[in-house]
Amino acid sequence: MNEGFKIKKLLIICILIIGFAFISGCAEEDTVHSAENVTPETPALIVNPYTIIIEKIVDIDNGTYFEITDDELKEYPEINKYISCGEGCTKLEYGRWYCELSSEEASRVFDFFYMKHTEYLFSIDMKFENDLNDNIIGAELMNTFESNGLPLSENYSIITRERNSLHDIWWIKEEANSPGFTIRKINDELKVYNSGYIEYQFTKIGEQYYEIMPGEV
Image (cartoon, rainbow, N blue to C red; front, side, top):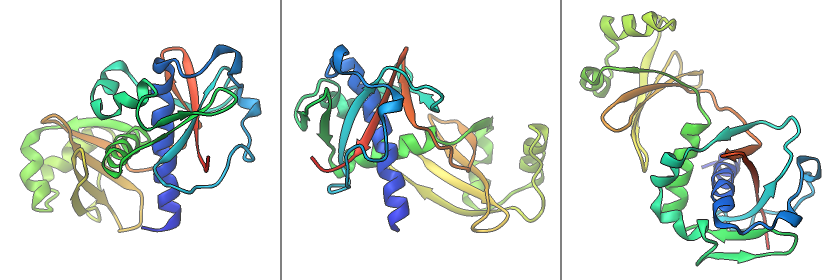
């Protein structure tokens, strides 16, 4: 795994945990910072890839964000200890705290957040699963994409199928390194996503915004 991918993975993990922090009450109202105070100089260096620093943000200005729903939070019972600032979390100065994740927890969080950083497009019938497993893009599947405004040329192929900690995933691309689509099997449903990665600065839960920073403590 290259260094850029490791950093991106860490940042996705970071974004998730900050959302959970609000529920825990770890951040004091009088120590909440605004987005204008979040700078590249804010701590610091990556030491442990599963250690994160959490801070609540009161004003994100024009910052970008994505939202986590209550139902999505319930899917990750292993992070309850972070919601309550329990085992593995330590308070810092200025209303911040840091938490440590196990490698297994980090993998689940990353896989969920990578999905959240891609655009959901539409769902397809489960009958296509066997064709996907056999790397077949048939006429019916091509018609399904076209009916959703995304026609596939004959140059598209199923590059690979993989299993992460959450889902089976199929990648559909024209070339190995080109943009394309991912199909994820989620709760007995095949969901199509744009494979392009969307950058976000903050996470929103309810009316609250958060940022989390990788760093040494």
